[in-house]
Every structure is written in C-alpha cells, then in structure tokens.
Image (cartoon, rainbow, N blue to C red; front, top):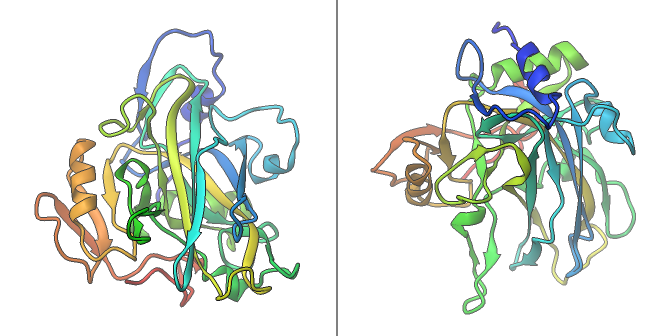
Length: 322
C-alpha cells in the first residue's frame, strides 16, 4: 500500500495570499495524484432549459463535512466556483449537461493537472455512486440503480446546423485513469472515512484560463483556471417525464499530479481527438477504451471500462463501456 504524503500540500494550501514566490508543486515520492480539497457541484433543473449550477469547496482539513458548512473556517487553497457557462440539451434517448467552472488558487504555488476526481462516502452519496441529493421530476428520490445511469463524459454541445452532439475541445476535460494510478487516493479515503469509502478512476481536469489550449498549470490568483464538468443521463420521450432526473449533486476530490494525459469518453469512437488534445498540452499518453481506434501520434493506454459505482475491489456492473 502506498503512503499518502500530505503535510507539505496542506501547508501550501493554507498559505497566505501575500507571499510572492511561485513554485511548481508536484506529488512527492511518485507521480500519483495527491489530495488538495473537496468540491460539490449541484445541477438543478437539468431536464429544463433553465438549468442552474452551484459549487461548494472545502479544504482537506474540513473534509467532506466542510461542504455542508455555509461559512468555512479553512477555505481550500484551490477553490472551484460557479460560472455563467452551462448548458443542457437532449437527443432521442439522452440528456447532456455541462458547466465550465472557475478555478482559483490562493496559495503561492502553481499546481499542474488539477482534477476533480469522483468519490463516494457512505452517508453522503446515493448508494455506491458519486452522486448525492438526487431527485426526479415527480419529486421522488433517485435510487442507486438510477444514479448509476448518470455517466461522466466530455462536454457535448448541440451543433446548430445538424442538431448532433459534438465535443468542443476547449471544454473536453473528462479524464479516466487506471485503478492503480489512483490507489493512494483510495487509500486516503479509506483511512479518513472508512473502508466503504472510495475514489473513482474518473474526473475532470482543469486548464489555464489564459492558455486554454496549451497549459494545465493553475497559477496563484483568482480564476486562473477553468474546468468543464459534464454528464449524460437517460431522457424519456416526451420530455419532462416524472421519472427523469431533475436535480443532483456530484462530489469531487480536488487533486493534482505531474502526469499530463487526455481521455476519450465512452461515447467516442476513436482516440484521435484526445490524442490531439494531449499533444497540445505537452503530454504523450491518451486513455481510452479497448474498442476505440486511432490516436497514432501518442501512446495509447486502453482500459475495458471505468468504474463509476462500487469500490475498487468490487466494481459495480454499471460502468462506462463503449
């Protein structure tokens, strides 16, 4: 079991804004991600044209419980805040929703590959998923089975000419990882919240707000980064059926790591787009599913599926598959 190194990051995360020295912070001991804080992103009225998004952030010291506080005593060094950029639309079978959030860094360090990694803590989440406080259009509570059907993806927007769902590269921030890559995060969750808690091998990675196509470095300052969070959910026909999901909160661990990768999500046929993205960011490795082709210009790391429910020792059957 890998040891989780936290002390220096907590000091950086709680440092005063007045410091002027800027350094690049990378994980200690190895290249696996490290925990910087927690975030909760709430999507409201996702089945309407008036969807809203709100965000809460807490520090490592305050943990998941800090997300319930109206005023945090120890704000996280990396904070995520809502923006006006959001959208939702549907095709014949699915509802696509996304938001592009602002990322601020109140420390004196520059963090690279800041990611919102999905997680589950019993008592907060719906069953074994990373969703919480989920309700349906008819007011009923979303159960575990339905929560498993809401899957993370790269942002989709509706092509105004064809009506098709397309991926804008400036909002394609979905990431998938191997279980071994996030093992120290899972260990951290187990240690802090008990063996039933888990980190998921998917998330959304932030990019610089001033160099959106070439940099994932989040410099000190307010709104120096952006991250796009997106999901796809089954949608009934006609719209606004009572059993459609209306509102949910998604929980993410704020992490950072030294390895720059890009990912294709389960709805993409090839790795070409992800390969182009990772090349622009200075990386060389693309993650995708084993049925996807392409990506000849970068190293392909393919997986059969990515767990979005269950724990690492017993993944649920409802996982991302192409």
